Image 1 (cartoon, rainbow, N blue to C red):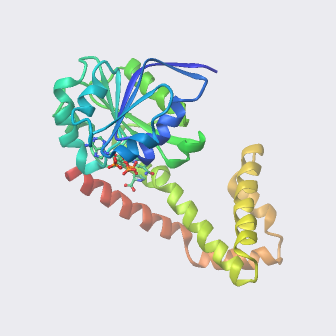
Image 2 (image 1 turned 135 degrees about the vertical axis):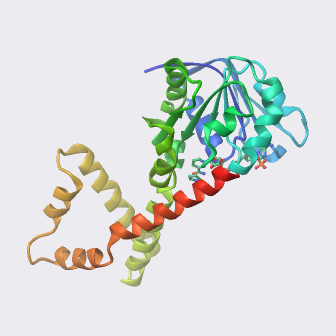
Image 3 (image 1 turned 90 degrees about the vertical axis):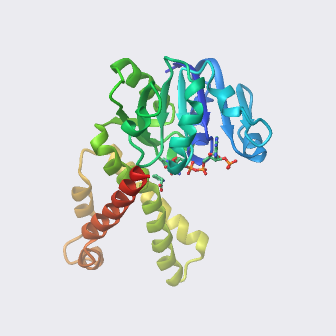
Length: 275
Ligand SMILES: NC(=O)C1=CN([C@@H]2O[C@H](COP(=O)(O)OP(=O)(O)OC[C@H]3O[C@@H](n4cnc5c(N)ncnc54)[C@H](OP(=O)(O)O)[C@@H]3O)[C@@H](O)[C@H]2O)C=CC1
Ligand SMILES: O=C(O)[C@@H]1CCC=N1
């Protein structure tokens, strides 16, 4: 499948903005009018410069952000949440009237951004598997966005994976699941691997066992019509070994641990929204 996108500027092409940039550079994607990206430091700008990407650093091009957004139909904000209001205010005089502003920042609401610019604003919450084209991205429309604007936003994020459209009232919640989620997964991999090492496996063997088990289980889930619960039960032979292990895991009340973790992330999103 090929994707055609209009000109794009990424203001703040760090971990997340840089991952989306990788998606835009896929041979199946054509960006008419070019891609311009900015960062603060020259080192970061150099790291994301490639054929078809004009990459500016504020360090040596003070008007980099203004130059990047001129002529851009999509302006993605990839800076830290606390920087969004000032960055947007700085960009406001240079944005094209029909530019769609898409923020990936945690917490910062479209209402807050719409108070700074007259443009259409969208909010997106991708995750780092974008780097390998396997992101899950939440996407929400601001009050001025049409279905066509949302479709453009969707097309941008589909270059790096799957898009889930959601009302903005749900996007902070989505962030606590899939935005932060890769960190939870890696933490589980870390701790489970430490257990394998304590049982005598080398760190390399431990990671092969643990990561391979995750990968295989997810592939099995994708290939089957069964739910995670049904697949778990197929591993858990009555009176067998797994049953004993799962009893221990259930005693730790994993659900309540995930409830607490996501609730804490949600509180932080509200703090970021308040500025
Ligand atoms: N990391 C993640 O998993 C996710 C992050 N997000 C959101 O993405 C945003 C960025 O996070 P992340 O990518 O992790 O952070 P990074 O620090 O990796 O990226 C931020 C980038 O912004 C650049 N920058 C700083 N100031 C300016 C400026 N004034 N103009 C242009 N560029 C600037 C930085 O450049 P330099 O390094 O040269 O200073 C840096 O490359 C956040 O708002 C976060 O909420 C959303 C989903 C997931
Ligand atoms: O931790 C953060 O604030 C960002 C948003 C979701 C993932 N990383």
